[in-house]
Length: 95
Image 1: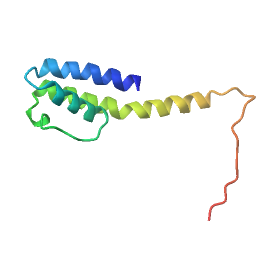
Image 2: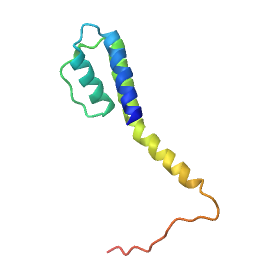
Image 3: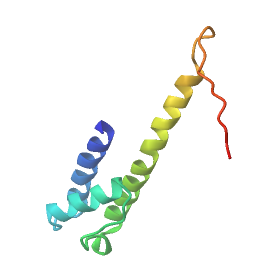
Image 4: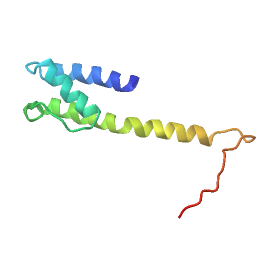
């Protein structure tokens, strides 16, 4: 949640600089939607200039790779376990 909050605040500030005429509520809503990759809008997206569109695109990308990065970190950490430890195994009946 710390990464998401940091991205949310930083990108909201950048979009406010790129689009100073946009209402702050719309900016925060658009960036929150982008970081969560849900696709909701309050109508600001079609009015964005080129810099604003790139900010939203980058925010959507960062929102998308966040969970993937966490999953990769957990997987890599599990692979670096000491040699004397092992994961539990279970035979599962299917069908």
